Length: 452
Image (cartoon, rainbow, N blue to C red):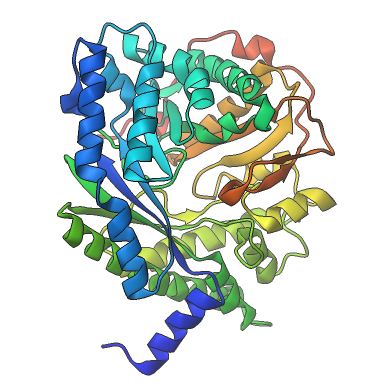
């Protein structure tokens, strides 16, 4: 039973502390859209996305009006296209990307994820073609997001894929250089990717998922920061407890919206992803939460510990509020999407190496980081390899969404707009890892992967 204090608290969270439902993401299986004729396959894809997704935006807008909770994005995730297009005789999958874009535009969603391949143990024909098609697809579409999984705790790290993805990122950057290489902002390289992630750019609908499903992503960094502001002088124990309780309240709002969306769309509810996903707006920053815990600036010594505390408390609060917490859940640290992170980079407290250390305890990894456009592809591959190793060894999801901004260098900034924000160009290590990357092969799975 809601009392007046609960209602008032929720209103404050929404109006002053930027609580929102960051995304309602509909997952759609395209496994039955396979055909040796690519044209027929793409027609099936277009029709199926329209069939399931036609009311998604309308229902999201209705819920936003009825419950008064902002629902920022309505999105779709589909079966990895390498699995669907692999049956066709096509020699590239650019037209598959275009049909996804056209279907996304038709139903009105802002992004569609699933131009993806899972190659942590090796390539199929479809994987090879899809990966080579990524740069052109991201250049020629507006709403399509791509992802590639190159490692897992069970399989190890596919170093051929790591090398190739460094080259693919660099090519994507060149093809979209007229917009500060924004194509790379729609491309994620994973280790231990998950099948039910509702957040872009890494969302796809896993093979183990149902025919269609509704997944919800909730975000509220401002709510957490506001709660901690009241704890001046209190112990770390009290900080953790307060974050946990606040995450519980945020998650309940997402559970309500998820259940209602599921009922109205006639599609089962899947998971609720409670991730503190920041935006460039003032007061909606994960970095500012860390500073409120006691850091002079994000990136100072102690930052990794504070982030570990935050991530763990968010997860604990979430799993008490919903029986089906999934996706990534925790705290994201994308540089360009967090005004506190941007400021920390500007003043020099947050460096690339510190960000890498932070990814060992955050929800995902190196996210929305702009680097000099002349960075070699092998260096980008080295960054991917390091991040994949953190994920594989620690049995967690890690990812790289990095943007070599062609024509720009340290001291410049890249402007992406909207939720993607802007980013100061960060320096990377100038020493080469080329010989390491060119060895190819596969880094073996760690010993603790052998559990049965």
